[in-house]
Length: 294
Image (cartoon, rainbow, N blue to C red):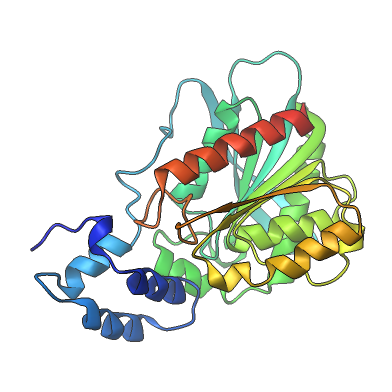
């Protein structure tokens, strides 16, 4: 079987995976359509194996990193799903209280990549909380296919309440300085935008390739830093109207478009990952939070 590299994959295959990952087509149709690109020694099996997440070999921070205090906690989301499980992380050694960050997962629950991202942010000197919106259904099931199916069973506005409750949990935490931001990816990008709309006290929001709010933009008080993938036509089509609304309402924002990268470019676990763009976007994100949450 030919060992695939990112350069072997046509853009149409990444677009097809995006449709599958966002529930536009089912698994059977995904596999069937992949067959059109299984040529020249490339098989459907090798394509599937290459495209689907690899959490075993792609995490950047060890779960037991000695510099971190990281544990699962449960908090109450009275207006959402009730008891919500979350990963709470912070540096073991720190002086004074820490800025807080809510880390919001994609459309498949709290998978290892998002946990890894929350630990990375904690290593930068923050207290982070990464909730699992699948908690009312038993939690992230261990694979993204089932996670996506489970998340479709929940109302997205109730899940928004779960992440806003995480904000409240951090605000009351003894080690938090009360300045709290949110960073989210895909579905989590939408949550990040909506938390900026809904939470007057939010200190900063950083959506990664998240769909945009279409009303109440005038309610946003938090500064925004927005990251978009140049090849992500599905999400990007909403950006011009959102930017115009931000300008009209004098919302402080900075936006970055990363050319020739796909939706999900920050996710280390799939071949959509683009190391250069992801590292630049992450540095910008951490610098932004250090500016607004310190």
